[in-house]
Amino acid sequence: MKVLITGGLGNVGASALEELAKRGHCVRCLDLKTRPNLRKARRLAKVTAAMPGQMEMVWGDLRRPEDLLGAVQGQDVVVHLAFIIPKLSATGVECEAEPVWARAINVGGTSNLIEAMKAQPKPPRLLFASSYHIYGLTQNRVPPLTLADAVRPIEHYAQHKVACERMVRTSGLEWAIYRLAATLPLSMQLDPAMFDVPLANRMEFVHTRDVGLAIAVGVSEPVLWRQTWLIGGGPRCQYYYREIAQIVLTGLGVGMLPEGAFSTKPFPTDWLDTSVSQALLHYQQRDLRDYVADMRSYLGYRRILIQVFRPLIRRLLLLKSPYWCAARRRSRDGRIAIPTEDAHASGTA
Image (cartoon, rainbow, N blue to C red; front, side):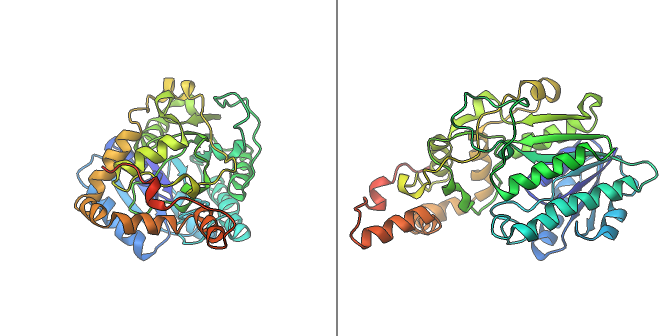
């Protein structure tokens, strides 16, 4: 099967590309031609070189219809992952900081992609990656969330996802939608958004490689189409955010950060009922400790540097927290007293 992945060099994209190539599919990867992406493309080409499938790299921009017409030509399935996200966007610009610009890419780009697909003699099927952020604030509900629950997006990012879901369903194409739980990247850079989630928030994790597996299995599954699916790690990956932060930060050798570094404002994450998607796709193979093991392997010798420079790394991370910085400013002004950072430190790898 011929499969195009938009945003194929991103977190989920790379996992999906590898899994599809492993299963013998011919995968075309569409992404922006930047210096970091050129490096990622070379690395992925090496990884997939010995796999049964083939990888083809094409460069393009979702805002340019002519780029998309060439990219979708001859494809059986399009997996649409390219999206400007709230933090750590590959473009260097956050969705919430520049919502109008981001909408032109997220919503406008999805519209351009759909039109390019419909212009083909035999339009490919479309698998769109959405997010469980679209449910909004749900901590006052009884978990887990289901497809029957209403969506109430509170972020520009989530609003863009809802708009795209609507377009996909009314496109006239064969479509499927995956609403993804929290999919942490295998990356050196920790997302500053980690501080925006209250430690008491419910959050479901799903390993990026399990999402890649769900995509690779799904593209060949006849039952998948014209339906929406919740994709998460399952009951063993349903945590309170405090547990996720503790396991990841301790596992990487940084140690848990002070409570004052994290927001107390409810955040749009929760637990999902993924029983139906798991019964069809059998993708839930990893948990958060597998993610930590993968991150430790990815870091390699740099884990020693984390140990050596641990106090400095902790300090730099805390400076990325607006809540910690605000509390320190209030403390310096004499309005409140907060414990020192070291008093909160706990655990190393």
